Image (cartoon, one colour):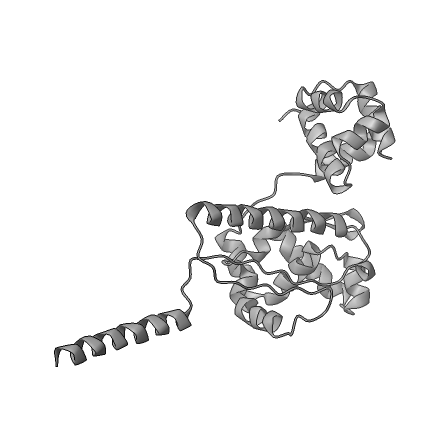
Amino acid sequence: MTQTARLLETLKHYLKIQGITYRILAQRLKLSESSVKRLFSDQSLSLKRLEKICSVLGLDLYELVKLSREQQPLVESFNDVQLKALLSQPSLVVLLVLFVNGWTTEELVEEFELEEVELRVKLGQLEQLKLIEWLPQDRIRLCFERSVLWQKDSPLWQIWGRTNMREFLNDEFDQSYERWHFAAAQLSVDSRKLILSELDRLMQTLRELQDVDAALPAEEREPTGFLLAHRAWIPSLLNNLQSQTTDLASKNKVNQKS
């Protein structure tokens, strides 16, 4: 990827997390939406135009280049060495969960009363495992996709998955800001594909909102549970009903013969 392309990708990412669409950007630049889309797709931005875009976004070129350097490709799975280390030290997994949710090292020391020396040792371990980059001013950059931490084969799931699931579901879900929906339906192949597509889209929205809200102070964010599940499934009560029906039918046949 060229430097220009990398800058444009960084700019698009910045627009996304700020909730600024091409239409809004076009209005601010006093251009048509199609012109703005063409600038990005053709990678035909002049330095002057790039400065103008940065200006309306409250950025300068230095900040854009800095963001571009920080925004390197993220891995989408843990390797064997990382898995072994995390499974043997659950406290490292807890730190990763907090970093994924936007906590800063300063907030961790203040809120959880962590010893700075101990925290720095763990940060060094995570950096050595290439799970984070330990930047100046104790800023942390994740080296993996946030969603990796919640996958079913992740250390988090292996250590606490089932327990967390039971804890999460052990609630009435009766508050106005809570939701509980469950259904066992019979659907066609096309309908199941549509449901899966909608679930994937909703999960992507959650990740994008998490990226945006991670920049907020910890006191402005609330820990939130979110569960999506879909699979082919016959409830045991239906299996029992089928068994009872089959047994009853067999008995009727026997009685008819006798």
